[in-house]
Length: 132
Image 1 (cartoon, helix red, strand yellow):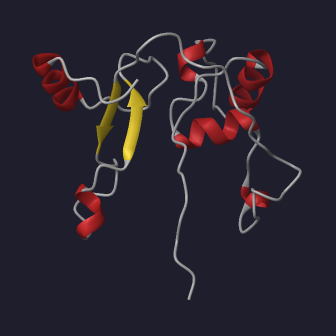
Image 2: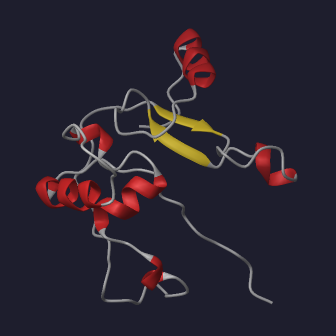
């Protein structure tokens, strides 16, 4: 039996191809809409998939080996960053893994889909930096 292992990307900060992302996102929106701001292009799992043109054709494919989509290392972040470590969102209280600290994002990043205000307040009160 194989053990499950994955990284779920819920959002990203788009650095290139913003016009193409805007076009892909606009095609999936209904009715007349305002132009999307950069922070609205990929700030959620569905929006991320729309902006990158990821559809059900990618289901059940090994994206570590597939040539249709890939990831490359980005730029190092300047200086120290507050990394917020919190529980996953949208899964409720479903078993022991629901409350595990398995979600990470940079505090203050406007491209995050959902901010954990409670954890961020606690970090600010203690001056706690999770990592650098």
